[in-house]
Length: 269
Image 1 (cartoon, helix red, strand yellow):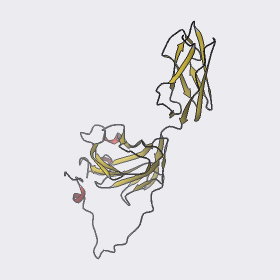
Image 2 (cartoon, helix red, strand yellow):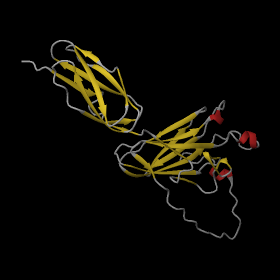
Image 3 (cartoon, one colour):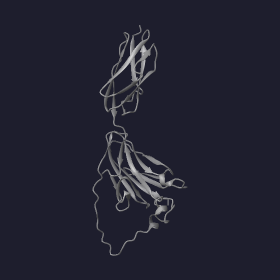
Image 4 (cartoon, helix red, strand yellow):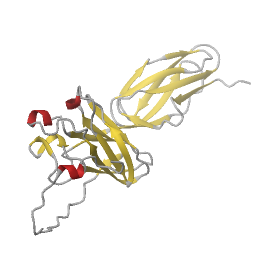
């Protein structure tokens, strides 16, 4: 004997959460006689269904798309125009989506005296440096086992150049070497991060390619690498970098940095 019933599922059985404004798909299956009009509904969040009603006639895989416009826990329910048993409610958590963490956030630490911004040593748009070996450090925590983190580099100044800077980075002590940036636009470098808890990302300038190194201000503007922001997932939180401890070495002679000492930074140089 066949039961007259209606089933529904999210686009993937494992999809229990997603970012705000990103559509989620509900898939309906009918097990009954005749054509039935099925109408989905949602509580807990706002958003729109497309279409608002579907027609089922012993069919499978008929879909409705819901686009959330607020965050929260969505509860999906459905009704039908016939005598089919309605499916159980489904829950789906709508989160705020990826978070952009600008360079003025306390989660950033830049190697002292080595970076400038779009306003002297400061400014809210970027931080840049022109010496190999200089580093930037970013701190965040995650409540999930599969966090995501990426760093956005401004590469617009490399347009037309044959070589762009290379970076290296470490995440929680695991080192990744020889990452070549794009020669145009922005380059969002995704980092390999795993596990819940606290994470430390350190980014190093490895190689500038030695273009426009000494030709004055206009040319040397190309000879930098520039960080715009970090991007972390909705379940992660940027955390303040620890206070920097200053040590006064009081050298007996002047110490003059020599660029050649740090050019070609890295174990293979």
